[in-house]
Length: 168
Image (cartoon, rainbow, N blue to C red; front, top):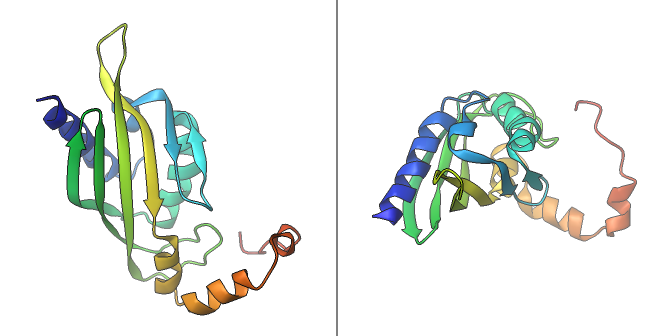
């Protein structure tokens, strides 16, 4: 029964997340949650950092996004999902210029649910996330093979001194 409850918690969180509004996640996440995102996004420690340093920019870039898990499975205190978000690329994200066009962002999530020992309340405590950033680049018109060859041809030090974009 607990695994079904865990899947329901994630489902309920998605309903709130798909409203594309900040401030709705505290019902589903512990304040000290950890969100471990992909390279380029990084780890967010705590609900406030997750909302302010990740979700705000993501919602700004993709204001009409709607996440849809194609598969969701649960085992013990973990729920995993894989799916896509259909959205309009309305504003720049991670330095990638917006296209104004519809795109599909693929993702995989692994959530750990924990119990607050003092209240017995079960909420999301950790989220391991993979986002197909290369897919976003490709849909924005980039030739991914050329992008990867360019990046691979440079040393890490090259990018430390690479000038910031003026349109960020």
